[in-house]
Image (cartoon, rainbow, N blue to C red):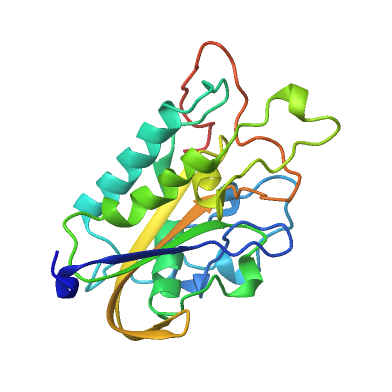
Length: 242
């Protein structure tokens, strides 16, 4: 294949203070209060995250196309429904505009890193960047799931007293965020960045994808498994409030 037409996929997951990939940026652009997106044990989100009632509802440009939104959401639910071992508590994932708009704000910075820091306690985040042409948005998403080949599910017998991090590759936390049972909301944004610094290299034109999840995957060093296993999968809708 001609080198000028080759696409480079790079994935990054920042694990800091037990967090997976978590972010939101300038959430004052949010159109709905996302308090229900957070776990009961997490600190209350900043006040400005919920102050969006008076914002204009029209936008000149969407943060992501309808087709890309459907493709990302359907792919997540597909892999969540086919985890092994089968899951007993896997929730159906739905699209959340608040998460998508905050993802848009971070994608617009063209910073190849997770951030900003103020909401890392609340949201999970996966990042992907690519240079060159691509046919489908899933070319930026599927590498997250590809980490499953390096991941070994921690069965109860392994969790004594804590569940070990059973990853036999560079990282597995993109995958575990995708299939975290209680992460039932997702919102993504895509941006074309120019002269983007990616690990020290300047990419003249890069496609930058940011996906935010809620509730977040804690991703601690000794964290529980992403879902509960059972012999018969029970793929159920997300909890009340949707």
